[in-house]
Length: 388
Image 1 (cartoon, rainbow, N blue to C red):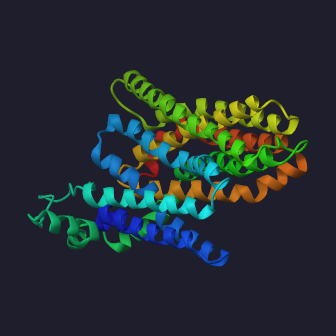
Image 2 (tube, rainbow, N blue to C red):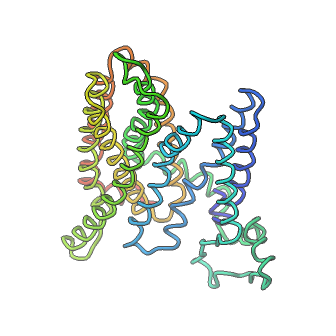
Image 3 (cartoon, rainbow, N blue to C red):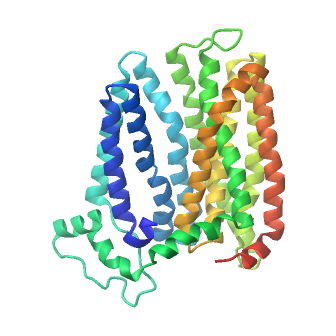
């Protein structure tokens, strides 16, 4: 809502300022209650780039490059839940946990500095005769300040959508069948893959016969698995999406249909199912750690490929509502990812990891069969009937 009225840059700037402030609060929290409050507020403001990215990429890049750039951006937020346990797991084993948050503050300050000195407003008002009715100041310092704090965006807001339009569009979008179905499918696939982030940590650290009995250093080392897998998924998805796009355009006589993007979901779900079953068997049957690593890697490669496909599909289906689609998908991913940890660990401990991860793979497979083929067959009709 704010980005459609005031632009991308001021929303990104202020969200990162507030996120960094609450991250400092985490670092110096005197007790658990304060830490929890600071962590919630930090997450609230820190998640903004996960919505801003789709806007910025589609503002800057033409159609044939958007899938590739979205793939790179998606890699950033998928690898983040695994990169910090891997990097800081070694640190926490030998130093205070406050150093982890202190280093995160340094990183956040560096990112904020890059935004301040090099960030540019990518929003271009194509509906206006002149894209800038109010000329920007000639002074570099004043120009930077007006763009960053939102003074220029506030003046431009009267030419853009109203608050009423931005508020009601969420209701208009969320109930559409091709949006709701693909969001539910992605929420489950992404949620289960993030949920195993907690489950795996417990099984790796538990002594035999329950787990592998790894110490903190070895657990941190194993977390390199999803990091490498996400990078491999980015490389694989980059060329897979481009190949599917070119093949679809060639077969349709130069016409591109958004549903052709969904062919990559078939590959992703196949890898996901194999990975979840292998990971569950490895944890329950105490197979070699190689089986655990391969299974986890396959799951994260599939998650990387599928998440990019869903982003690109929704962007192609609703090109006028990129930010709303990004926000809805981010909400679905977040709710799915953080809710799974509440039931996945007790379930796996009581009934075994193979049953737990196998059932989750079956749920994802069932949603895939109910959603993706229907979208490919009826997607064009749904887009025409429920277009905005």
